[in-house]
Length: 200
Image (tube, helix red, strand yellow):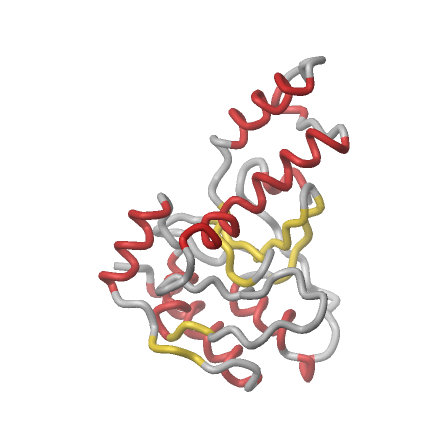
């Protein structure tokens, strides 16, 4: 059972996206499909993300020239498992890339090993403890976690993390609703998840 507020936010997010007319939707994921996905990929959807996907699965359209993601909406029902794992692993792999090539090191990891391979091993060990981020669309993510909802949507590109929405419903406006206009001056998201919030 998911929380009422999580269900409301997820349904509102689906309604916001549907109103843009940009995407068609397949039927939403069933309880059995959620159970299979969560078992197979080792995480639990946040309540609002789960409710959004229960309303309907956005259908990918052919990519534009130069687009990074050929299928930005994760196809949880019938997608290629390796592609889904790659998309799930994107945030961690991006941080590891920054550790290896850009000298990134999180202060909470202690002193950086002088050896590059040892630094990567240490970083990988610490990142395994960080909360799982689940793709919403391309490199936009919500934290995993049954019983949680209302987290800001984060855009993750290596260690360049930025807010893309106060929550899932606001994200749909920010990303897809051109008629909405600019960001409200009172827009002030606050990330709550350990480690990832430190990159913002």
